[in-house]
Image (cartoon, rainbow, N blue to C red; front, side, top):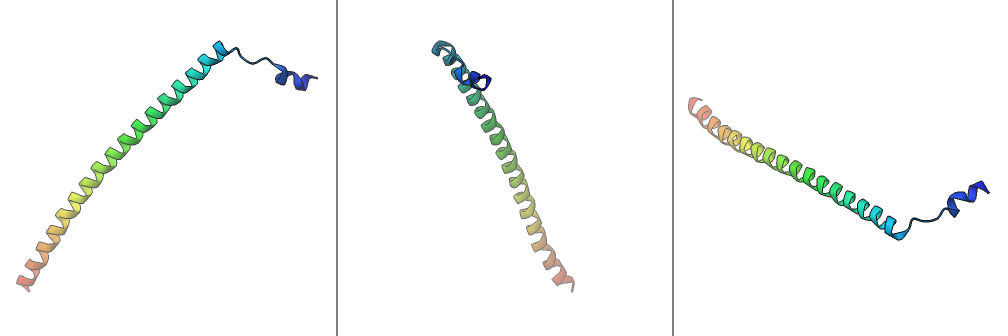
Length: 75
């Protein structure tokens, strides 16, 4: 008999349940917005780092192109 007690508990009235459902949706949307904001910040940081690395690689490639020319002249 005690095992059936939770099944026999009355449901929340619709006016009370509606507030909880609305609150749950609000919390979910807020968490979703925070998550998207964090991901956007990470993507921006990664793009900035990739631009810096590309610039570094470009400068290094230019420097390596200039060095063999000097070696050929001195050899």
